[in-house]
View 1 (cartoon, rainbow, N blue to C red):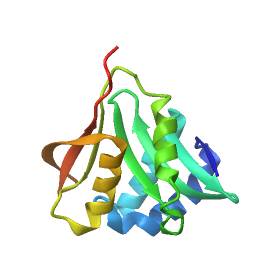
View 2: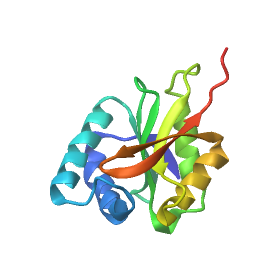
View 3: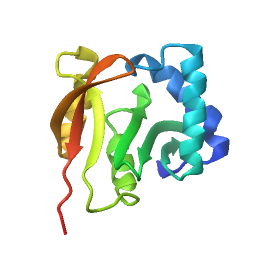
View 4: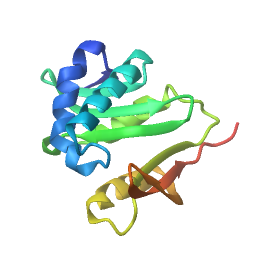
Length: 151
């Protein structure tokens, strides 16, 4: 398993995985939304803010993050590769690029959404704590906060 920053030529493999998991993410329901996401991913790659997990020349995990906003923006692992600590390894790699004094935010489904339970449990396992309720892409979500130890 190779965890690394994504490159521009990874985009087609990246989007293949997005297509496989798009039903789990609000905001990826239409072809236009997928095209917009592709553009967003390319922007994140350009800013060295896209991490991928690769095995046998196949992207099996993806993570987008914002250093400026101290935010984990997108995280997905191929269903066939889950429960292998891939997301945890990508998260650890992301931490190397983040300001060590800033808390990290992520949004995920609210507690009453069944499809979001695995993600919520994963973030709690990493040490995130529940934050405020909000909305994204017209979907009710909740912020989770990874508290950094202040130096």
